[in-house]
Amino acid sequence: MILEGMKVPDFTLPNSEGKQISLSSFLGSKVVLYFYPKDDTPGCTTEACNFRDNFPNFSEFNAVILGISKDSVKSHQKFKEKYQLPFELLSDENLSVINQFGVWVEKSLYGRKYMGVERSTFLIDENGVLIKIFRNVKIKNHITEVLKAMER
Image (cartoon, rainbow, N blue to C red; front, side, top):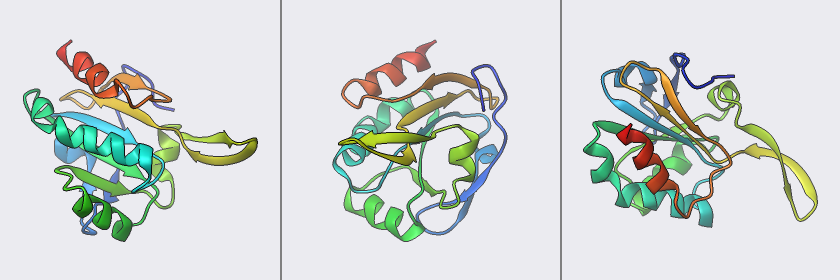
């Protein structure tokens, strides 16, 4: 499990075009790494569109946004195009990075228990150090919280 203050281990995942993207390629920039359950579902679409609509604010902090779910490259491609998302969506179908960050958890819906991605955001500084964790994210004010954390 990765904790605040720790150097985040490098990883490489395919983006929506199948190109391999490594976390280490963003050293020198802040990284907003957000994990979400599923492409093109109501909550995940709202969250992605909130990041999209606030993209210029993140750019002011020299920050890149990376979204990760276990959806396929093809699913990410459709989702990114449909909502004109200006940031990378990375596919983690084998759950390697999702498990590394401890966001694969037991969830409950209408009394049914199942495993899924806990909506979470990790803020990484320019040197690759984890500076803030947001777990079990509530979408409504999340962008404001992340932007505030970047000001520190």
